[in-house]
Length: 140
Figure 1: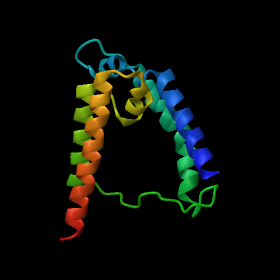
Figure 2 (figure 1 turned 30 degrees about the horizontal axis):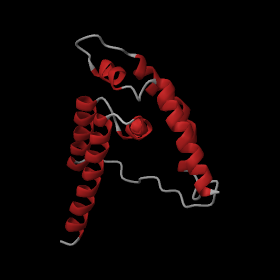
Figure 3 (figure 1 turned 90 degrees about the vertical axis):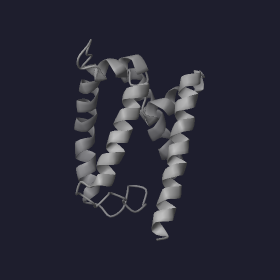
Figure 4 (figure 1 turned 180 degrees about the horizontal axis):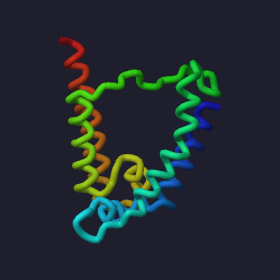
């Protein structure tokens, strides 16, 4: 049941990304181009996503287990630190350069454009590098 739920959640998420235009790098770059031909439509998508997610996140924060019985894994850390800010900046710069973030990249990967393939390979390399650095830091 957990795998089916994860599959359906991912499928709905991917379809939502496609319908919202977030899998279109040109549309994303248009949203990020505040000084040029700014396209605010993705901002409305984000506001809608936050509005839809607000109540379920509030509800989840009060529970110890998910509906499928798994323990809730909501981050407890609330403070901003250099690691969070640095990661956010790195994510934002990558998003701004490529016009793609991880969710849409996986959604459009099967299209076969070499740019998306390079992006996903770089993303996977970054994930691996992070894991190696985390392991090394934990060993200190």
